[in-house]
Every structure is written in structure tokens, then in C-alpha cells.
Length: 196
Image 1 (tube, rainbow, N blue to C red):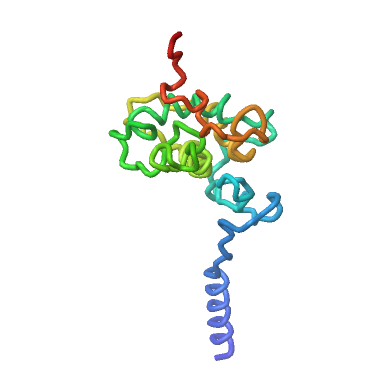
Image 2 (image 1 turned 30 degrees about the vertical axis):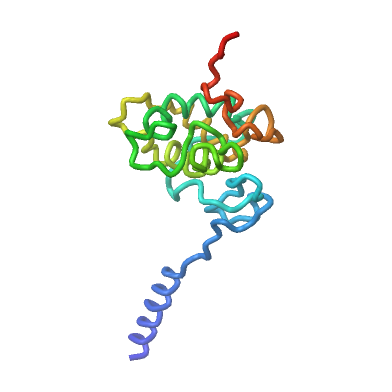
């Protein structure tokens, strides 16, 4: 009987130990990656709100990029052209006719004028973590049935490195997005020369 009770107690202890959840650290304030558990990374997800612990990958799925693979990519120079080619046209830009998800835009870094531009929808900076997971980890964006070009493995790695490096805007991480974060300087003509 003692063996049966000891065996049952062992099963209960094992079951309980396997079902204990780790506290959710998502959104907790951090300074460096060491402030977050191994499943999270310390990133600047929301402009002006400091850095927080965020889940940027799924357990068991290899990472698409390495932060030490060179200079941190920037939105203007590296990421915006990828998003423009693969995400913006008819889905995550001014025209969302081919998208079921219209709650954000990827044709700008952050809304101009504190959110008035684009109906106040969040831009690429606010959605950086989501962009990385969908393009570099899950690799389900853009959908395979889409007519837009799929990002290459190298482009997906650039997006991952951009997010892991703090999702900087232009030139350096200290640049601000006072023009709304559009690569064309915030002009409504998309950067086209208006003529003389």
C-alpha cells in the first residue's frame, strides 16, 4: 500500500510540476535582455515608452537572424524597401483592399502628428515585434497565394535583426521620426518631385 501511495504521490507531483506556468513577462519594463526570461527579448516596441520584454520567437523554431551579423538595419535604409515590395501594396498601406487586417500600416514608421495621419493607425515601429514573428519566425507573411514577391531568406533576416536591434528609424538609433516616419520625408506625394 505504501508503494502505491508513494507512486501516486510521485505522479501527482510530476503532473503539478509540469503544469505550473511561468509568469508572463510580456510588456514588463526592461533595460537589457538579461532583465527578461530566455523566452523574451528586451526591445523598444512602443515609441517613447521605453523598452519592454516581448516574445520574439517561438520555442523550437530557429531564429532567422543574428544581432551580431553586422550593423543594425534601419527602417529607412533596409526595412522600408522590403515592406514596400512585400507588404504595403493593397494590404498594409493606404490601400487595404486585399487585407483582412487593417488595424495598422507598414508604409510608415510611426503616424505623423501624433497619430492623425493614416487615421492614427500604428506604423511599422509599433508593430515591429509582430512583423518579425510573421515574416522571420512563422514565415506566413506575405501569404503564399499573394501576388507580391516573397521576401528572401536574407530579407527576412534583415527584418529580424532590425527588431532585435531596437527597430531604429534612419541612419542611427538616435534619429527621431518627426516627419511621421515616412521614408519620403512625410510628403503626401510619396516622395515624387512636385516639379518647379
